[in-house]
Figure 1 (cartoon, rainbow, N blue to C red):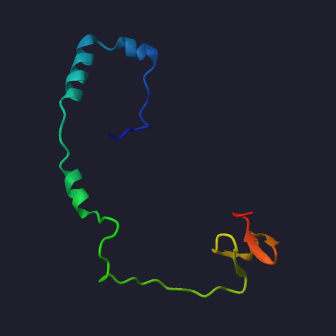
Figure 2: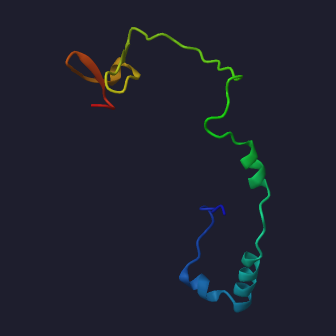
Amino acid sequence: MATDYDTPRKTDDDINEDSIEELKARRVDKSAGSVDVDEFEQAESLELPGADLSNEELSVRVVPKQADEFTCSSCFLVHHRSQLAKEKDGQPICSDCA
């Protein structure tokens, strides 16, 4: 059940002011459960890992490494020169790995 964090919270005085009838009515409303049918339909649309994707085509534009970029020798990601932390044995290390 979703929680709305923007709603005002009740203080101890407000809780004590609730009548018995209101509390009983709330309890009856909460106990009347309903089944959400959409959950099953959403589960059918999910693809499991290892699914056959042989007929799928990816379209990704690959840009070569620029002059102001380097490849970290620890995580092997391409970073901008501003993220160069140090060089270990002549190999660049990014600030995330340092």
